Image 1: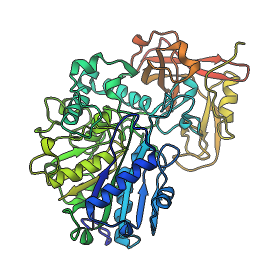
Image 2 (image 1 turned 90 degrees about the horizontal axis):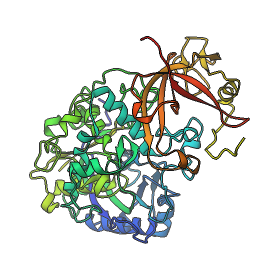
Image 3 (image 1 turned 180 degrees about the horizontal axis):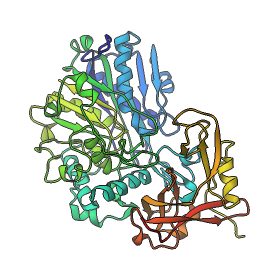
Image 4 (image 1 turned 180 degrees about the vertical axis):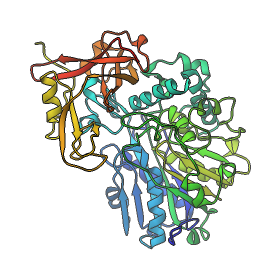
Length: 391
Length: 139
């Protein structure tokens, strides 16, 4: 173990959000300002005590950290920002934990904010999306020359590969959006709250086959923010701290494809039987799967929930199709997932909506969708990054 | 030739030989002179051994369907008339996979592992695309 052990050294002291919705008629900066102010208020921190900021999704679709700092009259000692993709939520929180542990800042607002309603369709993919035009193509497998475009198409390619390799099908995949919609029905913040059935899923149109409309997340407006500080400082603040006890960064390289774990055989990945083993995040947090009371994951597309479950060893490759049936991932099930409704139904807040929900669950603030006795909750993604929180 | 309305490839000094070869109706990818690794997309060095001794080698143009999708939504004007159209990931006999469209087959007849061969599609005087069609072959 490194001698710089960050287990439980940092904590989430406050969370906040703007409304989530379509055509809110508000800009990303406006939404971000509301989320930040609400998070500070939740923590009981004054504006002047906020001296760090990390934004996971800046311009042109989101709000930049330095612009926010200037417009909100902040005096930041440290800020950072990631490239405009949704995969960096855990990374931002990990950096924030390191920042406060290293003394670079005392309180770091980590957030995502965007407003997509005003952008003409298609918002992702097509001529306005320059992902695929970059040298060596896009990060989600985009290759526009052949009409291959949009993040969802890359997920569809993974879904087809998975279906063929493991004999799974679209009907089984329906369990994921159906479960998350049930959760959203209990979440006043969620954009889509009308329950759906497997039949509704099967009747929804293909966008990029084999993925259907109900396999795709929402495209919306909204902002959410968490404030990271030292565990010591958090204990003196308004709300009980939620400790960051495990952290696992994003792995990269030729054996990785954005929406698939190594071995699945997409893009240039080799084909082999992936073995999750004990992922480092569990060692760092000193917990096992049995301790995880709920799992949250980046569900831009339903298939990503299956990939995350297998990547982190909740089940073996090919088993998530069965694992997710019969309510196991629903509230009251063995492993509730995305109790906020996820990107699929609460709204696409770049993963920040999930972080806010996790903290509220661990504080027992979730009302009708509260997981009773929740103590340890994990954020784990198809990409291989993760956080483990405990109260 | 009618005006070509679909997206064009982003040609860089690194991938220029790939597109030039296609215009001559050859499928060429980089082969490492150090370790023999054949890889795609083009890289300045061998991703396996980091040798810079790379040679653009002619490939068989044969492979198998690894995965595929069917677009039911139009994202590009140039593809609007072709909805639903397929995009396939073909694994070449030599190992690398590439994105392509399958032709001479109905979308519902596409199967994983199906053997395919390259068809050089001269879409403009300047641009030839590698598309693939089913072929008969033994395992």
